[in-house]
Amino acid sequence: MTIVSAVAATKINSNKRSSPCNGFQTESPKRPHNNLASLLLTEEKSQDLSSDVIPCKLHFVEDIADQLESVTCLNNIFFKLDAQDDVLRKFRAAALPAFPLRVYLSRLVSHLDRWKSEESETTASDLGVRSLVVALVYVDRIHRIHPKSRICSWNVHRLLLVGMLLCTKITEDRPISNDFWAKVGGVSLQELNSLEMKMCRLLGYRLHVSSDIYENCIEKINHSFFP
Image (cartoon, rainbow, N blue to C red; front, side):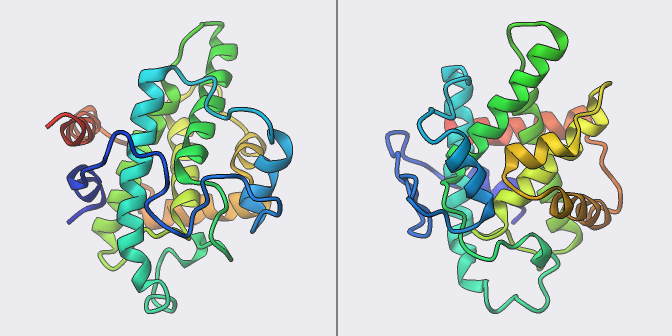
């Protein structure tokens, strides 16, 4: 089963607000586990990271995050078994990210939409959600090329961060700097540059996503929300 299919097949409880995986914390810890969360904790400790995302978009992003966490938790059992042969090991965090995936993705989407709105002088943008969907397609494509690859709680944040970065590089007339992504994503610029090249190689530099593939991904996700 591909990543997109697995996400689409996972049913969620719309009222559920806690992470389905015990490795994630629903509240910001006083001491972050690694650098993926440290920037988020210091820069916006008292701010709602999802405040800039409109309600319907926020629910869509959070639902994707909840379903992804369900998939990653099932794959976490293979974390140590796959350590040597995992093609995604470069994306693995040293420790479990302290921020729940729903908070992290909402942050990426909101900051990207804010950048787009300021760049185009518009009041609304869907670039964040579009980039997230394309990132899912990239992860799915990697899994098709490398069937033994698995998303887990240690790599999913970085995989989606880099996937969204690559999407904007091929869709936006004005490129967004990697420095922007490093600050928003909570990783070092050096690490981000390395992960970007790694994902390009894993994808065989096939970064184009056709409208049919994109719409099919949206349809699968929507079907899981509204069966």
